[in-house]
Image (cartoon, rainbow, N blue to C red; front, side, top):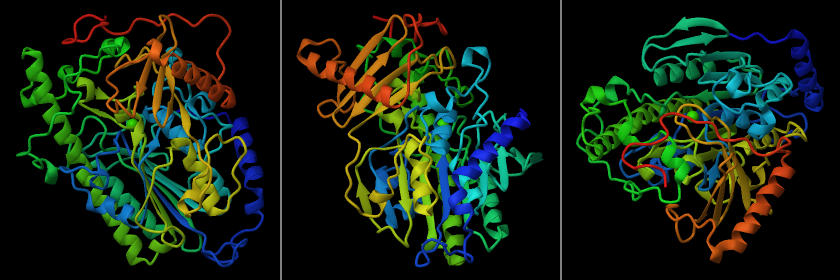
Length: 512
Ligand SMILES: [Ca+2]
């Protein structure tokens, strides 16, 4: 593992101490009680994150095939956000945003990979402050279990049990237990679930706790626990409306290597590369969706065990539970799999928050919430000062039923190119009605969608005279958001987009 420069570690520690000073100077008067507000208990936090789970892959978001009764309990006891998004639909950058409240261009985790072509990004820089670090400095007992994925080591945790750089397998995963490699037996989600129960049991009783409970599922390679291996076997997965979309006006997507027909993952299930394109596409969709749902069954079961344990310990009322995912996923939309692109299936994530002591149950909120909002929200709910540098906004008032002005749009960004799947660099702005996408390297391309009249994003309106004024104002808004968020172009013309992969996806013909 990469080692940090000790001099810089001091800097980070000092920064955390300084920011959390107000709270750290007044430790909790007694267990579970806030010094500042004797009437309210200091909440515990269980922050549950899955990997690549799109919003509708939960029964509480309307899925009629996959049943997730345990995760749905979180929604039943709290708030379901219907418009939650990530600002970069890729694992490590999005996770860093959840932790720091910063956009990718600010926290510097622009890609999953390292090396010179990926900006030599080292993971989170020492000077970046995360919400677990602040909570720890404020007296919380902190832990992270499961997927970490950043190239830097976990910091700010009293206890860490994470999949290492290799991310571990689905079966008998190797994990790093406080930095020491340990081989576990069983399915990764069960191991993560068991470790969460151990954390609850063994934590010091005199401190509030914050647990980051991060499942591997439903990330590739979607290998289910044995007991769920045959689930959905008799079901025919419905084909999404855009499954046969020809990617008209999406030239860059045609070059991306995300065609579901070309997935190599299910060759052992008889999907042979020599089969006709349409046949491979159809079969891969069935295998992909079923396995994606199967691994989520074990997440649901393990979430249920944790909820039961909180109930049994009498902790449920004063514990904030967040359930979300680091990014969405295409399950056949536009004939694609994977994420990265700024379309709805990829950027929209589940977000459920339960906190019985202060948040009313069974509430829906349609405000636009972003991954960068999580850190300031949890800090505000725990009474820890929110660093001014954080770019997200606390949605605590929305949880508490207050009516506050809220954002009407947001900036999206994606940088990992050329890389796996060959999704070009792009950014964009999404409002309630419109989405503008800019592939800004040369040759630059624009996409404009009217989400109200074309929710499936099939008709690119960019360049059409009728929408010229809308396009212009969205371009201006995107630049305004970039200025506000400190996203600055380097001097000189936009670079030429580098070649990647074969350049053409099978089945779609050559780019237009
Ligand atoms: Ca992910």
